[in-house]
Structures are given as C-alpha cells and as structure tokens.
Image 1 (cartoon, rainbow, N blue to C red):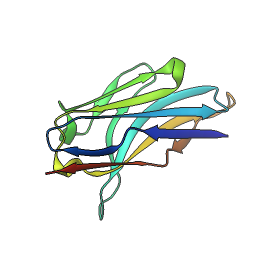
Image 2: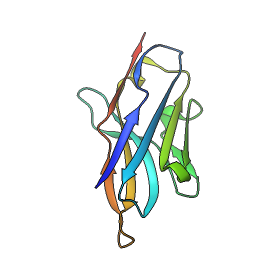
Image 3: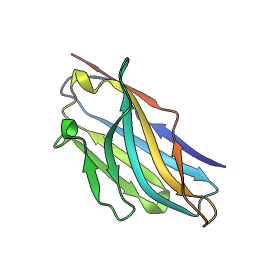
Image 4: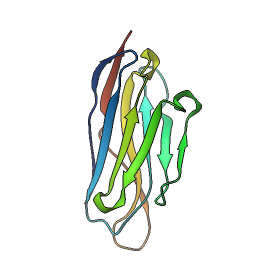
Length: 120
C-alpha cells in the first residue's frame, strides 16, 4: 500500500516563509512526476508546482519567483519552499505523485493535505 505523508504547514505572517515536504512510502517500484496542489475555501483545487523525475519544475504563474519545488528521489520525497507568502496563498496544500508500485503501471496518489494559513 502506498502512502503520501505531508508535513510543514502552519500559520505565518504575510511576507514570511514556510517549507512543506511530502514523503512517499509503502510498496514503491518507481515514483514519477510529483506535484503540489492547493485548495482554498470555495475554490477548485489548483496546481501550484510540479516536478518531473528528472528534476524539471513547472510553476503556476501566481507563485513563480516565490515558490521552489525540489525532490529527493532516494527518499521518494518532494519539497516546496514558499517565500514571500501572501494572504491569497492560504489553502490546504496537497501532495500528488504518479507511483508505480510493482513495475507494471503508474497510478495517481494524493496526500491528506496540510493547512497553510497566511495572516495579512
């Protein structure tokens, strides 16, 4: 069974920084693309940043220049460093990963979510 466990959310003042991490565990043959999504109250879940297995990142326009996604393939872990946080970054942040548990095919997995609250 595959699990994604996030950590690092919390409360921060506008302009501050937070770092999130998400570790995949369980039956894992290969972790492919990984990403962070977020969902604010009353809004749809949106992609924040993604990263390929080879380390190529992509970002939502709203976070470019402020957020940095990275990963450690040896630890099956993805990170999100968030600087210059704004009130509108307040949301539940979810980790997402394409994981192949047995070397046959990849499936989509989600973490349980971690709350990020930015006070203005």
